Image (cartoon, rainbow, N blue to C red; front, side, top):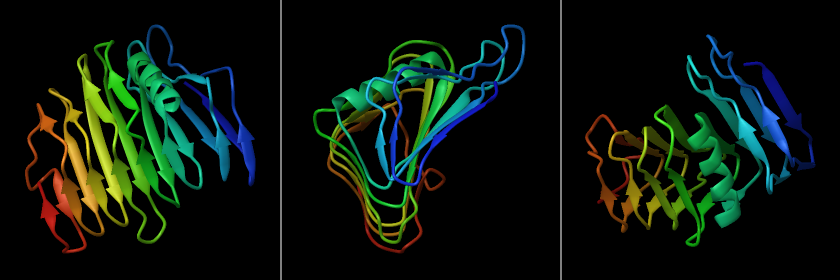
Length: 193
């Protein structure tokens, strides 16, 4: 699969197509990292898939991220190609209300993972996350709160929520079962579902 890293201390602008695919006969997908305190990935296409191995990963590492409709569509394309999408930031993560991240094609098992690492930083899902093809596992890990304000649907996948503070849900979670194994709150604050 290989490794491709696009990184800077300040502004990173990544456009075009990046490929770190596994071999046609064997081999796992590779790793693509796009990092920068000010990160612009508008229109990028990332494929770290594998035809006969494990999905590769696309790591997105900005300071803060607000995922709009265009960025959500970019993530969806990578998930549909068979690439895991991992967003990790020192800041907050917001999925805007106009954004939909969806896995609609391919029979691969992939994951969408959103992680905040800075102290007390939240994840807010105001947009939709859904899967209708293959398996999409959704992992949300926040040092602060997790707020699920819209629909999360992954009929064959798992949903794992881990927060240092409260986890709240006002949007529907369909096709998933949240149990003690998949719903975690390390801070002892309220979990409201």
